[in-house]
Image 1: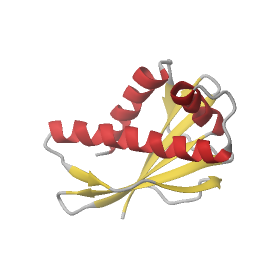
Image 2: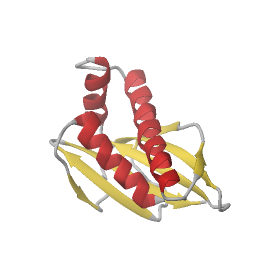
Image 3: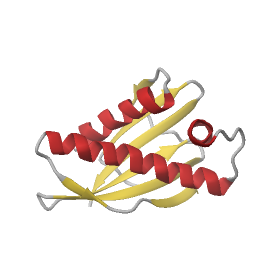
Length: 139
């Protein structure tokens, strides 16, 4: 499941952001915008996927989709939720192609602050001067 989410995030960076990126397994310790979405696998497993993004990353997404050079906090929160939907929704399609199907729930904006939640796996994407991290936790 996590591999499909990471592949979907790679596709998001390539096709939506249209930028080169690097990856690592380091969590951003700075203040970030955090959203999550719960996944219910057909196998009965439940997971929570966290999307952890620096404000600069979400502003980049906002500029691409809305052409806003300086978005307010509410717009940035909405763009993070949309990013969550796009990445995890794309991962759902990838999973169906490999016979791993699951349902996704509604994404929620968690907070603007430090990521202090437990997780099982994490991958970060660095694009220019901004970072997007994805973490997953089995519930």
